[in-house]
Image (cartoon, rainbow, N blue to C red; front, side, top):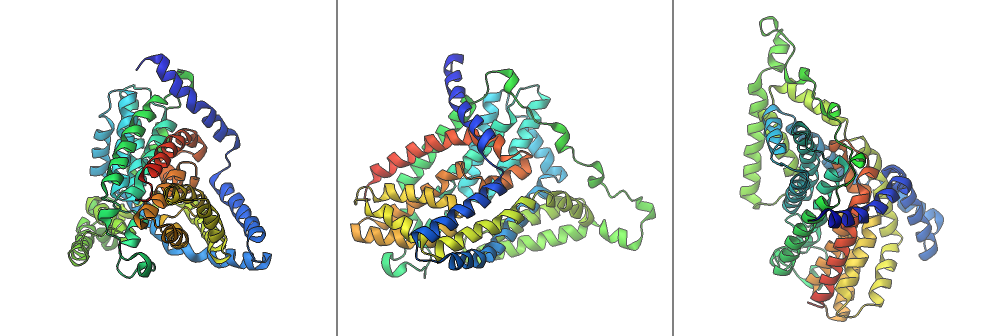
Length: 457
């Protein structure tokens, strides 16, 4: 790739980088503005009064408490696991694999994308951790890496999560007893996740973003912002008990006994094995959390060492605890006032049997800005779009894929899911989202044209 061609890709990303840096508010301000917009839309487009809309918002605030707790625990346990000595040594070796900046961006993109296909939560955590250690490895090799682009590369892998094993929409309609079963029956994952169309598109998307991300790297050395290695210095005291082994109290002896943490970790693995044996290989947020916790306990030096790792990790979850209830409030307004029905119905009215999948994709992207939860979005949008599919004789799986693609697509300009990744990577949303805007445009063209090609199924 010539420097002239490279300059074109870098030039394309610059306007979006500047746009985000100047005009994109902090993620918390973003959700406040989004809440206000949703409120105004509801009282103007639906029959809900201002008081009823306010009530819908207030009643919605606690609806993501369980989900918030799950995400918080996943982040803490994953962060703690990453900073146990064996895992940190392994990640440090992975971080030394790239021998050039191009390889670094491509490696982070590809691995994060594959991890997202395995489980959406895994992709976000792996992306944040991997980008950090790759940047540190490149720093040791004197390879100049633009850290914001590296972290953006990690987040861009998330643009294919809904095509993978943890696809909320696909798993919902494949479950016996789901709420739409009387209309569409049970749609097996062989028609959605493991559909040749979906798998091929996921592979093509991953290849494209793996190529594009390195091509957005700054050509001007003055624009490169390398990782601040001081931010990620691990306190050496957390790796030792700071207590003379020959002068421990009984309590300190128990606290520093590695067998206790090992026992609990093994017990968790026995439970996980029993769960899989009983339910099949079915990943959910709880199982992911317990897996991270089990590994962390086994690989830590002692119970008290693991407590210290958790204390360090807990510093990263503040934004999640603060912002997720507000998104739940937006979900409450969208669902309880009927605003989601109006938006989806207006889109489906202009569709034909050949374009409904495409409009499902567009509406999925729009709704995701207000309800950035794959499961929550399908719960409120799915019934509306399935009814339209029934009227236009469109295969239901086309709608499932369309909504799924739209949901993952606008994640590239919606800061909600950047929170856990950025908390680990140590950056602000404005530093990466200019680059993910480019991914948003490219994948929008790719997904939109693909849904038009798929037609009515």
